[in-house]
Image (tube, rainbow, N blue to C red):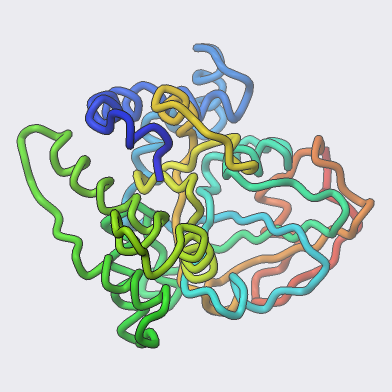
Length: 306
């Protein structure tokens, strides 16, 4: 849910396209080297593409190179937990040249936990893969929700049933006023994180129950924008203004179906507790080579060359 939308949602939406057009390419430069025009030039020369094209390519259906960090003391065999239907990933192209673990986590809106091992996944599913990756906008996510609940019918009178009902109410619209379809979509999207039914004097489910089930099934939290970009610096769940939300939409985000690491063609490394620091860089190429694609995680002594 976008913070600030309840106060003046159309004011937020009017600025979105300008924010995306100017902010996403600049954000790519910031991720790589710290900001400024020289940063964008550095990214372009190292990647071979202008920053705008890196952003453009990452938002196309054929994009298939994803990265995910997990902090925990276990060895994963699937992309997410046992009750998850979909799992969030970032775009690998936005983390090349390498950035620090803390930066990857911050741009993804997740907390860093240095008291555990660091698990890093890089997945490159091919066309037609059961991983079914998609840029995680509200329309795309709702489409996947309906598919998942059709395959796993929710029990009546449960948060799953409420989520499925809301998803079934979505109808995308068109308008020459771009605010209009965005407004309609976000107006429904925020209901997934609020008491259900929305506006009821005596709701069937609390906002906390809805948020918990959305997180369990689809990896979404109230800081989820639904616009295809993660909102940085939201790991602690801060209250944000619309201006802050728009300025903090940095990197594209995706959901993949919760399949095995092998099915998603993932490389996986596990760096033990104490063998990594959040200030160290993590090279996606290191995950690919040290992790040995094939579906099994490999324990490594450190984060690789710095």
